Length: 328
Image 1: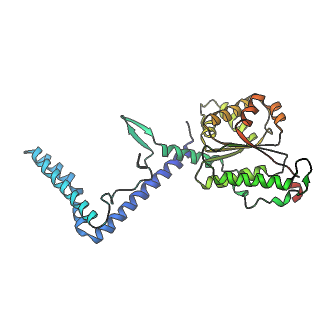
Image 2: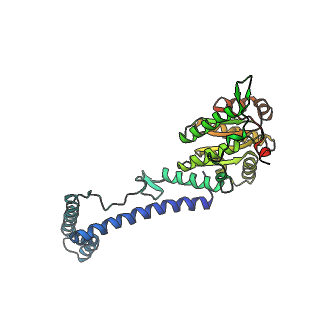
Image 3: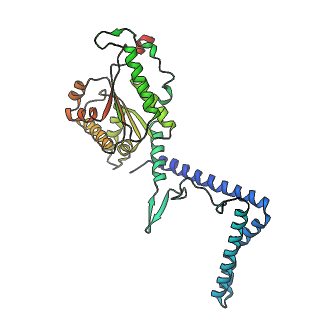
């Protein structure tokens, strides 16, 4: 999967900082012990010099094997003494070892397996997180929270058929979204938000995004028109870069706003279907907001397309009057 140079750099910087912090913390622990036990400091200094002594023994000639074995045995004895001092005084034997965030690659981002260098899962997570941050740079994620959502804009008059007011309905929707965000994981159920313009679909989906991001998950928010535009640009640029599509499939939560408002094209329909289908096969959640009814979605896309979405998503119906009009 391809990423921009800026994403690679940002991810590498994250891992480098983790590694640096782990090694600095290990040095602080060493200094703490050295201050209490000068003998440990003396032993550590001698251990660090053992490599130089071995090299000198080799250069000096003579019975190199015997001399190297003596130096090795002395080195092991000094290491054992350091560990004994540590454990006798309540420290773990590995107290001087850096505590890396990722033990598999020691925060390098890569490790060797069977003679082959492979990218570590921590590097993959950092790349996705940085790619999400880059894509969301201009998204209005900070503008909408659960705290700023006001249910008082919804009418409390009870519908005689539904035996429910818009206020009651939207209270249930609001509570569902809050609970969804609180319990979110990478395999949470998808959501299809339907309703007219200005009823809070974007606000609640962004409120979910804010809470999910706080949990450390990678979230991408995009309007359908901007998403199609970016995918078209990548597809027709002939640079074989599929990073945009891959990130949309790989991120922990994808939010597509205003589905149905994009310029209708076969390319857009096929791209959306491929994204939805790929995420659903991987059991990854997606939140879709639309002003269209199920029938209108079928007319814009296809019955198979809509069936795939509706069959795998919790449908939330938004009702009421345009809040933006009321505010004006």
